[in-house]
Length: 161
View (cartoon, rainbow, N blue to C red):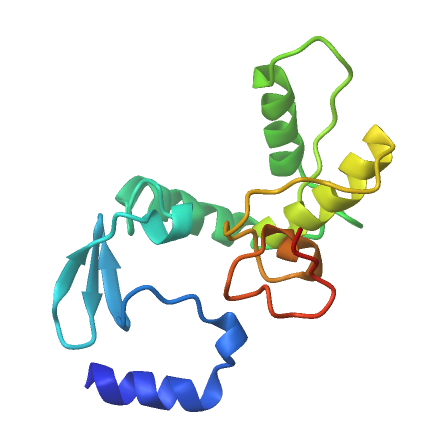
């Protein structure tokens, strides 16, 4: 079943979206475990690429997500701010070390954050280039390609030094 699913997936999902280390297709997740489509269970040591660092389907987190969704499922901070994001920004500023003026920027993804850094660091430092860890994965956008990860480094505009 898993093999036929991966073949079907290969027909419709672009290779540029695939960074695969093991041929697995996920059916369910719970706690720290991933169950594939054939029922085999795996310990997820990657925490879903650090997105699920407390595990999957944690009851307290699930309940809070549902509570927030029932109260306010979405608003764009760009045009209609709401209290949760402001409170989180205040907390982040409070716990960030250093005695200097601070503001928070919320992006939509890790790629978004890396694009922001790729724009702001050279501007602030008045330098035209940045150094990155080669072979790291920083996301799918052009700004995130500075890592030189093998799955993404063949795109045009990426210069390997």
